[in-house]
Image 1 (cartoon, one colour):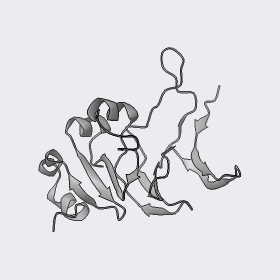
Image 2 (cartoon, helix red, strand yellow; image 1 turned 90 degrees about the vertical axis):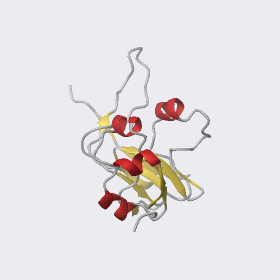
Image 3 (cartoon, helix red, strand yellow; image 1 turned 60 degrees about the vertical axis):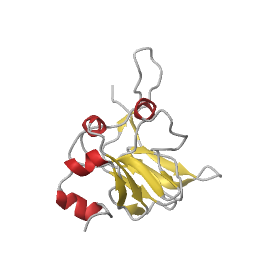
Image 4 (tube, one colour; image 1 turned 30 degrees about the vertical axis):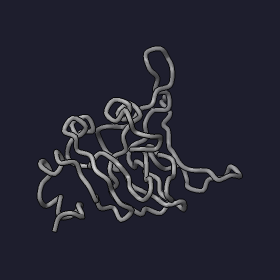
Amino acid sequence: MTEQAARFGYINRSGKFAVQARFSDALDFSDGLAAVLTGSPRPVNQRDIAGSAIETRITDGPGTWKCIDVKGNVRIARCGVPLSRDELQKNFTLARDGFGRGFVNGLFFSIISSNKTIEEAVLAKEFGYMNKLGKFVWISPEAEKQLPRAWLRKNFVGQS
């Protein structure tokens, strides 16, 4: 039996593809951008123990989160990693809808892409706000202490 794989894209109001299904995961558009995951597709039939569909993400392995515009053009080659609904509910109980799931008022609150797994980055509190130019304008004090100076100079507006 071959396993089917899911690819994500975007359709317009008439049901035609506006952005072809070519991503491993994709979030809703907000502020004109959407975070998408490139890399290997995930299995279609991911289920929890009771047989219900569950929200999952590829946490390890190949793939990069990028931000695209409504035409599918990459605007930010390396976005921060969006937080899952579970991570948001557990770590940010007072957050409003949309927080950590895309751009809101020009900023994207996300896990900072580093060489850690998502779980390690969450435990280390490596979060930040990225602007639409792909630069972090604020990062958590914990992240600033742990990230290499070269990374900070390249990716953080507050460093020179």
